[in-house]
Image 1 (cartoon, helix red, strand yellow):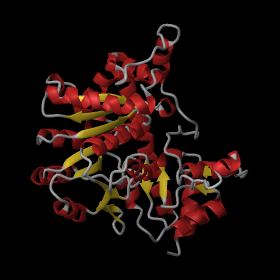
Image 2 (tube, rainbow, N blue to C red):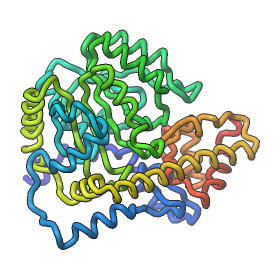
Image 3 (tube, helix red, strand yellow):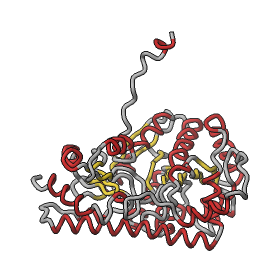
Image 4 (cartoon, rainbow, N blue to C red):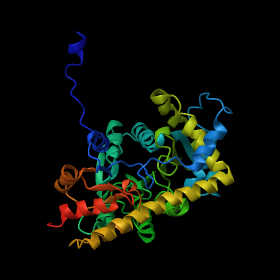
Length: 403
């Protein structure tokens, strides 16, 4: 009986990103390189724990209890997260207009919002950029919110298709929901300029669209958290109501701690109280309350001026290393006499470079050179080091030179 009960269950398709790491780990080659995973590595290719995180953990050890957090999570973590996203002296925070809960990193924040959208705006849909992080589709699909796509990336220029994007925003029904990457668009690394963001915000205002920002890379993109929040600040200046998912996976290296925040800007304090209560209601049967350890790490770092300034220095160090590796990869390819333009490597920003390589070229990189990445040609720049950049450039040149 037991065996036939689940006999119809087929194995799930492999996750396109996590499957890359599995294949990499199984490869015995000493030359293998993993530029598939979206996690920072130091210049020796090793995972990095920030000094500010080590110090926060030292303060936690043996001093704080591990009781349940409230359903909405750590008040301190939420307060500090809102200051980071909306601005240190934001009037919106003072007026208590923001409904916010601690979430299970960016994924959890997106999922809570998607469930909230389905429950309270059941006839709405979500416009998602083409391309986007593959899990966005899974999140809104499982929340049963219908999805539409909007133009974003321009394959020929390896940049932004701004006119296509503006057309799609204009042609969407008034009051539509749009998912926007606040900075360091994943997987392309292509962001609108400040001027373009202003135009996007203006058109959203005209169309009464609702922007939901996924901000997974604040500080990690440019090295400056204020600069990386610019898109959100422009929308706030223009008087939009917004939603925002924040994550501390990349910018604090807290990947496995699953710390994030979901916030929704409301009309007034009363509406914010109601919305927060409903977000907590959605969280309760899903996971009851969020984990405490990572929340303590975040709140200690952001509320202590000394630790916060150490974090700002360290996050800039991570961003600068990635920017440096972009330059090194581009220069190595040019030195090899590549017939192609690789300008887009340094024009793009954040963890990923959308290389423009075809799935067949990526397969050759893996089969012939033991280089692992997702088949859409997305290179995780965090996996590029001074030790492997030349090898990587040679291999890329080899598979692209006859194009």
